Amino acid sequence: MNYNQTLDYLFSRLPMFQRVGAAAYKADLNNTIAICKELGNPQNKLQSIHVAGTNGKGSTSHMLAAVLQKAGYKVGLYTSPHMVDFRERIKINGKLIPKEYVVEFVERHQTKFESIEPSFFEWTVGLAFDYFVNQEVDVAVIEVGLGGRLDSTNVITPLVSVITNIGFDHMNLLGDTLAKIGAEKAGIIKERVPVVVSQYQPEVAPIFNEKSKQLKSSISYGDKIYKVTGFTKNKEGLSVEVLNKKNNLTLNYQLDLGGTYQTKNLLGVLTALEEIVKAGFVISEENIKDGLKQVIKLTGLSGRWQTLSEKPLIICDTGHNEDGIKEVLKNIAATPHKNLHMVIGMVNDKEVTKVLSLLPNTATYYFTKACIPRALNENELATQAKALGLKGESFDTVQNAIEAAKKKAKANDLIFVGGSTFVVADALS
Image (tube, rainbow, N blue to C red; front, side, top):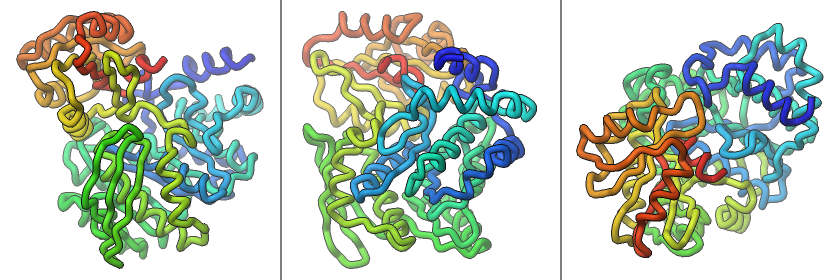
């Protein structure tokens, strides 16, 4: 098989959450354990950092990877989903896994893996672990795919476990309360492995505290150690002033990420880096500042409050659940514009009404759907939106919706593209 045939095989033969949703979710780790055994248990040969959470885990993973790179380490980064190229999921120092490695890995393990019947995600986790060990990375930053306790990545014993925040998402799989969702995320906590939680949330903190106590793991909350005392948006992204409550020192960080929600992620990143240093890594304050200033350049992170065009101003963001959309709306409000145009698409297993009810009825809408089977039909989305007073037209592709918005928008208007990670992926490709 060549690379494209290999991808076709992975995408079509294996259940893929990105495409089919809950049907691809395996509620145990048996397949992953079997895959890792077949590969010689590479997860046990990796030094790793494990990152879970409802929102912010992708940004947090990329920020940690960028800082570790600037500190001179060879850093593996495993994230999901991908935006344009499957290989975005598996990188070393910002470089995508080579196509030849993907092809050879699939050919080598296809027969044995087929007897295991893994999902797309389980297969990809095996590929990532194998590649990182083969390439002798110093450390791998591993982002949880979904949940935590039963996620395929949860076979590692990391140097530190990081949990960003807990919000309502994937409730059909993880539970319908913050406590239930929090318990699933707490599943990544390991015995005597320090835990860093970016935000103290009273609804879930007792769950994390109890689990940490049971497993004799120290626990730190980012916003209890650090405090954002001010931030400004600028051309480069975000300038953030942070107070370290332990020594009363104020530090300034320039981020190349423009979303104001990154201030929450930053506190978790700074706290996690303290634990990584305790584990023996040498990271200077200069490394931290340099890494945070170049996250996009060093790691290739995309889709987070990303400017696609200046005239007209087009911005996309992957925020797709209640908390994510609230943060998006804060950033829209902080972005100077006259009229707002929103290119919106969603997937069919989300709490559509809850998200739509947050959106402003003063905007002009371009309802669309991403190129995946899980996408909610654009006309159905428009019907639900209309019932909530949102007005607009339907378009069968994201590109058509963006083109229509560009024709209608005036020079000082803002076009926002989002509602789903996959809408952003279509916009970027």
